[in-house]
Amino acid sequence: MRLVEIFGANVRRVRLQRKMTLEALAAEADLAYSYMGGIERGQRNPSLSVVERIAQVLETDPQTLMLERSRD
Image (cartoon, rainbow, N blue to C red):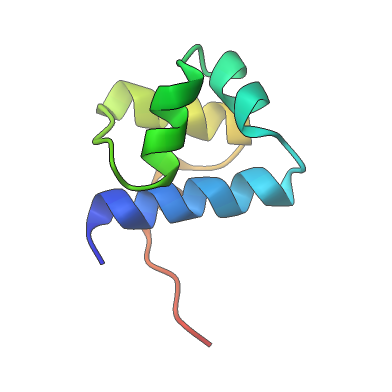
């Protein structure tokens, strides 16, 4: 899996754990809804500053969003 796909999947997983909508995450990170959706689908390659903003909103470390999870 590519890093953008891993990042997107982790953003989605953490967002859902936090019971946050895609719209709310996009708004709080000051990103367009469509851009945020593209990130979650692994179709957008966010800058490091965008990665940092998303991590801040999700209250997690940016590194955590980059790590591939083991498949249990």
